[in-house]
Amino acid sequence: MKKILVTGAAGFIGYYLVKKLLERGDEVVGIDNINDYYDVQLKYSRLKNTGIVQKEIADRKPVQSTLYSKYRFIKLDLTEREEINRLFENEKFDVVCNLAAQAGVRYSIDHPFTYVDSNIVGFANILEACRQNRVEHFVYASSSSIYGLNEKTPYSEDDQVDKPVSLYAATKKANELMAHAYSHLYHLPATGVRFFTVYGPWGRPDMAPFLFMKSIMNGTPIKVFNHGNLERDFTYIDDIIQGLEKIVDAPPADQIPYKIYNIGNSNPVKLMDFIYAIEKATGKEAVKEYLGMQPGDVYLTYADTSHLERDFGYKPKTTIQKGIDKFYKWYVEYSN
Image (cartoon, rainbow, N blue to C red):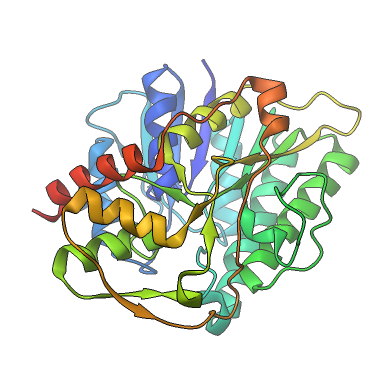
């Protein structure tokens, strides 16, 4: 059993990781600033599922879970350096999982400083707190978006990633460089995880699966960018957590204790096939509005997960139709 901090605990992946860690017996502290980038009620609903009562949440106030004796949640922003330092000094975490970040590629086009504050300044605050408090393993979220204009596929952790096409991607690349510097200078064991298009129940409403499902259910047009000529390595949330859990338990032991892993399905799906899977699940045909390529987008994401398979036996199991069917079932229940 370890004491683990999960930042972004009200977020999509953070919510699932918190539940997994609690179910296996770890002590967990979750933090999140609960910003309004998307519907905060979805975030409060995720927290409710882990026993955190919304009316008890206040800035910097620990809230004890009503469902898990080993879980507490604190509404806290990563940019609050003194509060972050105080939290680390008081709690003495064994492991830190930094999943908090300002997400979204398109949003970064018009809101650059939001990304700099959260993804650069906030990330540095967490890194330094890990160093000062001798954390055993720092795990952090990177993104498939850092592969940018890479033409070689599938994307490997060994590829050069110096051509990001969005500020969001650039901040994630910066995170990897910062973590490597801390591993080199201070021997902080750090592992970065490049997530590939995660979807499933409780998913983010700003991402294509949720947007498409909502529009198809309501009979409103869906925006099909690049006229449907896109492919994404859609990865079901359970497969993401399967890989992430194994990584959390295995701090790098190299001379420079630093690792990067792709977590994806390693099976890109054409956008039109993805839309068809939703149509099949819902029994409704999509109204499609075909548009051009959007700034910051890439044509293809495709994960080479051989490193994760080699080190941890990772194998995603969820087909796109099975994953969409589960997402549809949850969406109907949540909407009602």
